Length: 204
Image (cartoon, rainbow, N blue to C red; front, side, top):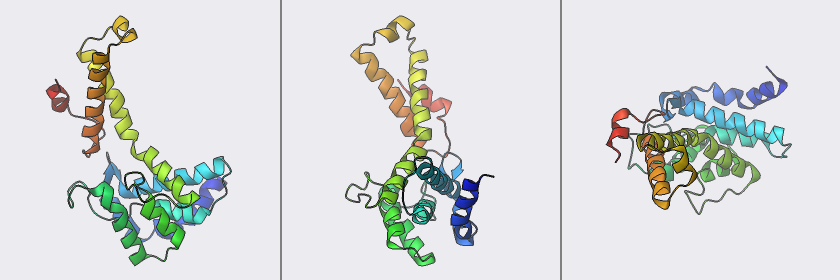
């Protein structure tokens, strides 16, 4: 274990072992990743990012805010009005304020992490912007993988040759983009990190 790993663990030791935070292990975030693991991943990547690029910031607020940014404590696949993306930052902040003593900077990180989806909630600190950015990178890995998979599936299914790929028409581009977006959209609403065969075969 590196010195950096030890310092990161020290910043989160109390929270990562708190029974209330451990409840996040009961909920799936993306693919087969629990909300706890997602939040830990975002927090760790934020910490490594500022260390790697020597960015001066409040590291404790950064890591705590990153870890609590999705502290909403429900299954977003089945709960509520299916507008989880718009609402869950408020729920996470409400829960965090109820359960922990967090300062205004941490509150801002949680409140604004869904920008620009929540368009008027612009990150107001360096730490909030970093968490917002890293969360987007981590959360779109599954969708990005399946965007690529959809493109390749269209190429194979519609018999694109090397020559055709070198001179794509506008209709070809639209076809490839349609498959790519369909694959990535489908996986975002799924518990898994792949589309099933039946879904792919239903596409025109």
